[in-house]
Image (cartoon, rainbow, N blue to C red; front, side, top):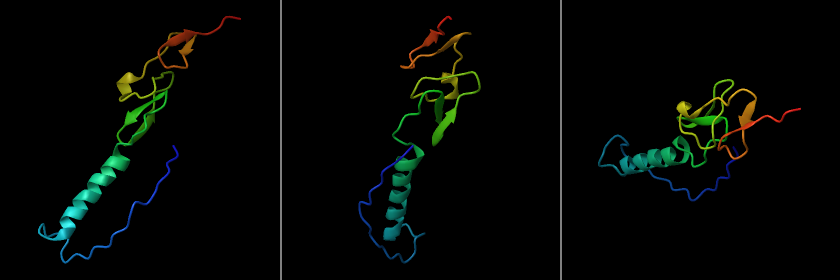
Length: 99
């Protein structure tokens, strides 16, 4: 997945003791962790078909299984019946065309 990033600002902070809760750095460190989690730990994009959300990213469904776009767990992976495939909308399985 491609991301476009933009720097919103840079602020330099000199800390006396980053471990001291009374120090101004304690608040900045907590904010940095929250921003990291919001931006990277739970990306805003949904996982595509044939994958599911696995922690911070998307994982493929097991072989011979598929899933709808936006699936949140491995339990969402399913197998289409024999001679069928997942349709383009991800809403179900279509039978393969006969020759």
